[in-house]
Amino acid sequence: MRTGDLEEFRGFAQERLVHLRRAAYLMCGDWHHAEDITQTALAKLYSVWGRRRQIRNMEAYAHRVLTRACVDHMRRRWRREQPSCVLPDRAEPCADPALGLQVRAALAVLPPRQRAVVVLRYWADLDIAATAAAMGCSTGTVKSHTARALARLRSLLGDDADSDTFGAFAPPADSTREKVVLR
Image (cartoon, rainbow, N blue to C red; front, top):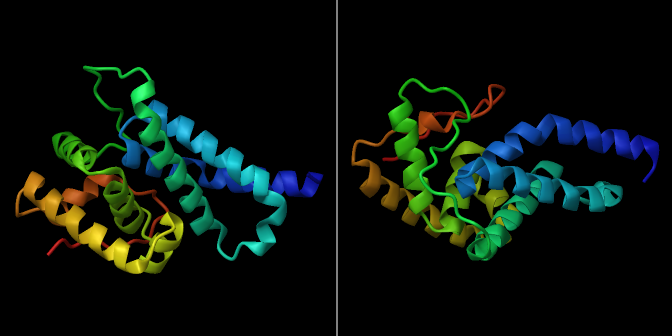
């Protein structure tokens, strides 16, 4: 890889590292695994960085690689040690820490692909088409996973789950995403 390409990759990785790690955490529910998944995703991105001009949207591609790395990790999860009785780390302080824990616990109940859809759609603020591209599936699959995941989250968090409930996701400070409305 040329020096200019290496510097460009470093810049991209430094700029997106926190966001990718938070997305990985929301998908897998464990900071240590999220760091491993993010590292794996960045290694895969590095291997194709020389061909980045052929990739239309590097951000969506990075989310796709991250999502696949997370799904692969979840499939292999049974081979690894499982810590217990450990409270999850918090991505950002939120107004109601108990609510943040409830949201993360509810996310942990969802199957990996439904969890990935919720994180990509409502935390990473990707539209349906970008989420489908990141996950390598059709837009109809994204819609059905979203509907099922939100219905499950409503049942776990109560019918009054609204945008304030999902404020516990703590999106990056530079995010311009609109509030999530579950109704």
